[in-house]
Length: 243
Image 1 (cartoon, rainbow, N blue to C red):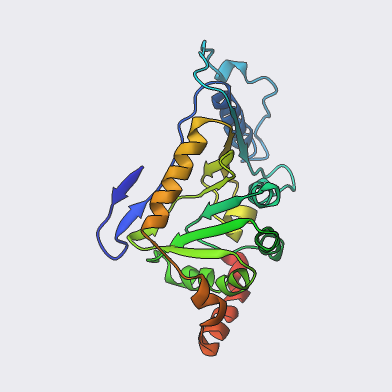
Image 2: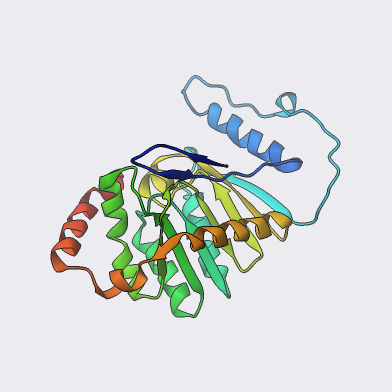
């Protein structure tokens, strides 16, 4: 999905996936489990069949689809673990797109290690901010990543609000999970991982179109930032867990 907004944000780019088949049932159960965790008085459902309509789906292609979500009922950061696994398992490339980049040291280390062993690791962020403070904080992470070989791109037409990743023409993700503290640790968001199917090819084609209208800023942030700018951005890190 794409739509155009007036200034100051320019063109607003977003993405989504349509699910059919058993993956829809999995995502429905995920929602119902979350719904039942809102209040102490909520009664947990053990059987969800009454909420799930039965359809005779005809498989039209091969591949795998796996919805996933973070939950208030455990201590797992599933969204972060999926993004990190994409980089850890990559052989050729691992590409990410996120509107906000406020990551833990663990994720930064994982991305950097992948780049150091020869994986083409790229991150796309917006070239026009919708939140200026968060935008500055996002850029404060560029230096360490760029120095370790991660390539940084900024989307020039406006705000790229998509949250996707892809690796090796085989596996990709799309969902609501930004690469920031709020999405990864404070919110309970969801995504969909899909592998070995046509949707992966379509996701890569979308990435390639985005790269065509994005500026690579890797070299500038690896060595060209002024000391004052770098210092002021690092000060913002103190508020990173709130962003």
